[in-house]
Length: 158
Image (cartoon, rainbow, N blue to C red; front, side):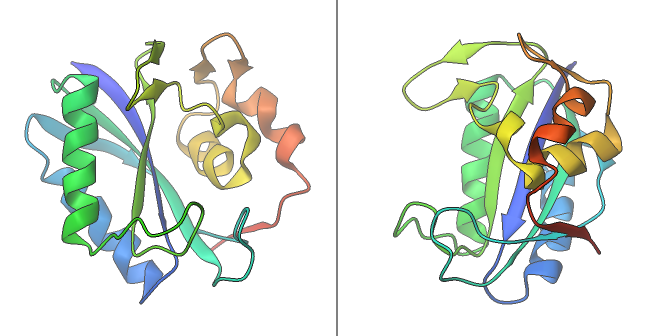
Protein backbone atom coordinates (compact mmCIF):
# COMPACT_ATOMS: atom_id res chain seq x y z
CA UNK A 1 0.00 0.00 0.00
CA UNK A 2 1.12 3.52 -0.78
CA UNK A 3 0.12 6.72 0.99
CA UNK A 4 -0.84 9.72 -1.10
CA UNK A 5 -1.94 13.18 0.00
CA UNK A 6 -4.45 15.09 -2.12
CA UNK A 7 -5.27 18.81 -1.90
CA UNK A 8 -8.88 19.75 -2.63
CA UNK A 9 -10.09 23.22 -3.55
CA UNK A 10 -13.20 24.85 -5.01
CA UNK A 11 -14.60 28.35 -5.37
CA UNK A 12 -17.50 28.10 -7.83
CA UNK A 13 -21.06 27.01 -7.10
CA UNK A 14 -21.35 25.73 -3.53
CA UNK A 15 -17.67 25.06 -2.74
CA UNK A 16 -18.34 23.62 0.73
CA UNK A 17 -20.75 21.04 -0.69
CA UNK A 18 -18.35 20.36 -3.57
CA UNK A 19 -15.34 19.63 -1.34
CA UNK A 20 -17.45 17.42 0.92
CA UNK A 21 -18.77 15.54 -2.12
CA UNK A 22 -15.22 15.26 -3.46
CA UNK A 23 -14.20 13.50 -0.23
CA UNK A 24 -16.86 10.93 -1.13
CA UNK A 25 -15.59 10.65 -4.70
CA UNK A 26 -12.06 10.01 -3.40
CA UNK A 27 -13.45 7.31 -1.11
CA UNK A 28 -14.81 5.56 -4.21
CA UNK A 29 -11.58 5.54 -6.23
CA UNK A 30 -10.49 2.09 -7.39
CA UNK A 31 -7.71 0.45 -5.42
CA UNK A 32 -7.78 3.26 -2.85
CA UNK A 33 -9.28 4.19 0.47
CA UNK A 34 -9.42 7.48 2.35
CA UNK A 35 -7.63 7.22 5.68
CA UNK A 36 -7.84 10.88 6.85
CA UNK A 37 -9.56 14.09 5.85
CA UNK A 38 -8.87 17.55 7.17
CA UNK A 39 -11.32 20.21 8.19
CA UNK A 40 -12.42 22.69 5.56
CA UNK A 41 -10.59 26.02 5.30
CA UNK A 42 -11.61 29.31 3.69
CA UNK A 43 -8.76 30.99 1.82
CA UNK A 44 -8.13 33.97 -0.39
CA UNK A 45 -7.32 33.23 -4.04
CA UNK A 46 -3.66 33.17 -5.10
CA UNK A 47 -2.52 34.81 -8.33
CA UNK A 48 -5.80 35.94 -9.87
CA UNK A 49 -7.39 37.68 -6.88
CA UNK A 50 -10.51 38.83 -8.78
CA UNK A 51 -12.48 35.70 -7.94
CA UNK A 52 -14.38 34.21 -4.98
CA UNK A 53 -12.63 32.80 -1.93
CA UNK A 54 -11.75 29.13 -1.96
CA UNK A 55 -12.71 26.25 0.26
CA UNK A 56 -9.70 23.97 0.71
CA UNK A 57 -8.93 20.68 2.43
CA UNK A 58 -6.53 17.73 2.28
CA UNK A 59 -7.18 13.99 2.18
CA UNK A 60 -4.81 11.11 2.81
CA UNK A 61 -5.32 7.96 0.77
CA UNK A 62 -3.94 4.46 0.87
CA UNK A 63 -3.70 3.25 -2.70
CA UNK A 64 -2.21 0.59 -4.92
CA UNK A 65 -2.55 2.88 -7.95
CA UNK A 66 0.73 4.08 -9.42
CA UNK A 67 1.27 7.87 -9.22
CA UNK A 68 0.29 8.61 -12.83
CA UNK A 69 -2.75 6.31 -12.62
CA UNK A 70 -3.80 8.12 -9.44
CA UNK A 71 -3.35 11.47 -11.22
CA UNK A 72 -5.58 10.22 -14.06
CA UNK A 73 -8.23 9.16 -11.53
CA UNK A 74 -8.09 12.60 -9.88
CA UNK A 75 -8.49 14.34 -13.23
CA UNK A 76 -11.53 12.17 -13.97
CA UNK A 77 -13.09 13.22 -10.65
CA UNK A 78 -12.44 16.88 -11.50
CA UNK A 79 -14.18 16.41 -14.85
CA UNK A 80 -17.20 14.78 -13.19
CA UNK A 81 -17.47 17.90 -11.04
CA UNK A 82 -17.44 20.13 -14.13
CA UNK A 83 -13.83 21.30 -14.03
CA UNK A 84 -12.83 23.38 -17.03
CA UNK A 85 -9.21 24.51 -17.28
CA UNK A 86 -9.81 27.89 -18.91
CA UNK A 87 -7.14 29.97 -17.17
CA UNK A 88 -4.21 29.39 -14.85
CA UNK A 89 -5.11 30.15 -11.22
CA UNK A 90 -8.67 30.89 -12.31
CA UNK A 91 -11.93 29.98 -10.61
CA UNK A 92 -12.84 26.31 -10.54
CA UNK A 93 -15.57 23.94 -9.56
CA UNK A 94 -13.00 21.50 -8.15
CA UNK A 95 -9.23 21.25 -8.09
CA UNK A 96 -7.49 18.07 -6.95
CA UNK A 97 -3.71 18.15 -6.64
CA UNK A 98 -1.53 15.14 -5.88
CA UNK A 99 0.81 16.57 -3.22
CA UNK A 100 2.82 13.60 -2.03
CA UNK A 101 3.06 9.91 -2.84
CA UNK A 102 5.05 8.14 -0.14
CA UNK A 103 8.43 9.89 -0.20
CA UNK A 104 8.65 9.60 -3.97
CA UNK A 105 10.36 12.34 -5.95
CA UNK A 106 9.28 12.61 -9.60
CA UNK A 107 9.77 15.19 -12.30
CA UNK A 108 7.68 14.10 -15.27
CA UNK A 109 5.99 16.26 -17.92
CA UNK A 110 2.56 15.68 -16.30
CA UNK A 111 3.47 15.17 -12.67
CA UNK A 112 5.98 16.59 -10.21
CA UNK A 113 6.24 15.04 -6.75
CA UNK A 114 6.26 16.38 -4.20
CA UNK A 115 4.02 19.15 -5.50
CA UNK A 116 6.51 21.96 -6.19
CA UNK A 117 4.68 24.70 -4.22
CA UNK A 118 3.06 22.77 -1.39
CA UNK A 119 5.48 24.15 1.22
CA UNK A 120 4.66 27.75 0.23
CA UNK A 121 0.87 27.69 0.52
CA UNK A 122 -1.11 27.93 3.73
CA UNK A 123 -4.17 26.44 2.02
CA UNK A 124 -2.17 23.21 1.62
CA UNK A 125 0.07 23.25 4.70
CA UNK A 126 -2.55 23.97 7.37
CA UNK A 127 -4.94 21.16 6.36
CA UNK A 128 -1.95 18.84 5.84
CA UNK A 129 -0.58 19.76 9.28
CA UNK A 130 -3.97 19.06 10.81
CA UNK A 131 -3.90 15.42 9.68
CA UNK A 132 -0.13 14.77 9.69
CA UNK A 133 2.04 17.51 11.28
CA UNK A 134 5.20 15.42 11.45
CA UNK A 135 4.91 14.27 7.84
CA UNK A 136 8.29 14.71 6.16
CA UNK A 137 8.47 16.73 2.96
CA UNK A 138 11.30 15.26 0.88
CA UNK A 139 14.43 17.44 1.26
CA UNK A 140 12.45 20.12 3.17
CA UNK A 141 11.83 18.94 6.74
CA UNK A 142 8.39 18.40 8.22
CA UNK A 143 5.05 19.94 7.38
CA UNK A 144 4.94 21.64 10.80
CA UNK A 145 8.37 23.22 10.25
CA UNK A 146 7.01 25.14 7.24
CA UNK A 147 3.95 26.61 9.00
CA UNK A 148 5.73 29.81 10.13
CA UNK A 149 6.62 30.55 6.48
CA UNK A 150 2.91 30.81 5.58
CA UNK A 151 1.63 32.43 8.79
CA UNK A 152 0.85 35.71 7.01
CA UNK A 153 -1.43 34.10 4.40
CA UNK A 154 -5.17 34.55 4.95
CA UNK A 155 -6.81 31.30 5.98
CA UNK A 156 -9.55 30.36 8.41
CA UNK A 157 -10.84 26.99 9.51
CA UNK A 158 -14.58 26.46 9.06
